[in-house]
Length: 517
Image (cartoon, one colour):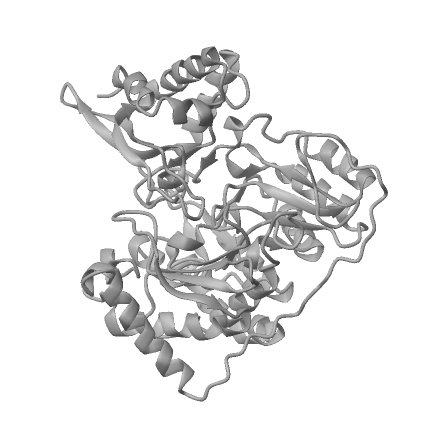
């Protein structure tokens, strides 16, 4: 199936129109609203100011093979790309591209087996998967082959009619629920028995919803039936009158609650199952047969795998902004490393998997720009300096916060990983973090000032999910001081932030009080 849906001849006929309209946009012959509506289908948007484009490279399941990494490194060099962002949907975004560059990379990507189409707009987005699936010691089972099968199938829906504004599908291999499978448009959460529980009609952003559990103990080979049922359910009950509500999560309220939504989904599932169409998933299994060298480094960024003697190196570029030179050097180093892959994570980390101890040492040295503390692994969307839809520059806020925390000498784990979104769209997943910020503004003495809404106590783990509670508004300039005071308070307690917050559930509100406006 994969060769069919990624074959260049399927998608190339659309690319000439993109090239022509992109040139028209840069010539001032097409306004930004019309261009945005058009370009999202191709996985590209104009950046703030309309002088450059970004391009989103789909990486199904977050898997960047050595070949795809080599392609990425190649276009970075060829087009002199200076900004690369790992996204919370496990894709690679290339930034500051001119009209010829974005069109050229899009076409070259197809030849390399990378489909950019459907990366934005009203289309199925990149299928997400637990980044350590298949190598994690305590996982229920390896869900990656099934996520890849789902990704192949969803590509066939890119030109389908009546899609929701976005269709985000995620697979989770454990209770950690890193991909938020229990509150995606459609989520497959692994079970200890080797089957999936299926969740539907969830999502972050405005009016967030946890997904409705529509099925339990679904055999993996049946997952494609549930994907088609999701599409049919939205076709029947989705809101096409209001673009703001053209998301699956709004069907819960429209149908009168979770129970009624489940009934509606079950009806469409029955239609699919009784149609006679064979949607049995048959993924290609790729077991790791590589042997370790018995020298796994004792390092905080090295994780032992369930394969004896093999390990994973964690690389978290600050804010998900991967240094292009590091990415290219990593590609070169991995080119001769058997079974190596780069896996992108929903928190903008990257995991380099299937390494021997000696190989891990090389990768550690190449990625020494990685975040040094839990707080430095904080998540940020690309921000309003780049994104047309953005309200606040989340990247500059994160940089200011990290600098303040470093200067204050706050130790590791005294602050949690925070999540920053530049607008309500929640691309920084601010509602899932222990601390989250959402970009906005606040009128002070008659003047609108940059500000962020503070969210606290979000949780993503399956069975303990919680959307962050909005605790008030803080001026952007005051957020670093707030975090320093919070970190100092936790440090003096002798506990890490997670334990401190558990013991003192109301103290974060009291600390925030003096900073709220």
